[in-house]
Length: 244
Image (cartoon, rainbow, N blue to C red):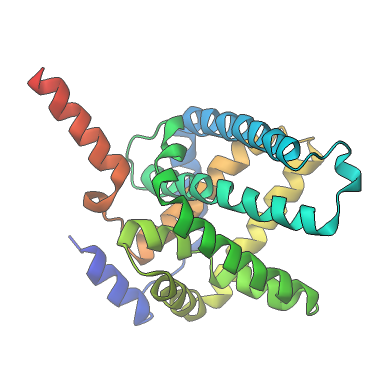
């Protein structure tokens, strides 16, 4: 059986083959098996963002959200990014765990809040460059969005330093850029289709997209379950239950 290190070396050498049809088929099969925990996590995240958003509006004494000063809006946006960074990381790891047939639960999205500072800083850094890219005729922004798509899981799954994670994400995605662009094109279409259904389809497409990303990540990089704090906490919980 190949180790994560071997998978990564093979991927960097261009030995991974993107079979889009097989990826989509397998992703659909995995999504069906654990869709309820994803839906629970989505509802939990929505509630958390709503509460945090109201707290921010209260702290900044915003009475009319449509008339926020630019400086205040920027501060609120940055704080929201920090709040969302560990949640998005949790969702991405849920996708990886589901793709590798590990059990997931809604509270998994809370597992990475202890690392909110570094995850928030990286998210703000990446978002800044994506925004700059979109102002430069859109395509650079889309490119940066695609090539940084592996950064957050690389940070928490592999324990890379921030710029090492960014560098490796760039290297891997550029090695298979056309396939990554195609996959993200599918993701954009799924988002559009979900919006057209007034958001109802998101209850399927979000778990599907996360599992698809998780499958690609696991195939390219390998999933280090021994380093996964979700897996570690579950093992400790089992040991405590056994000792009791």
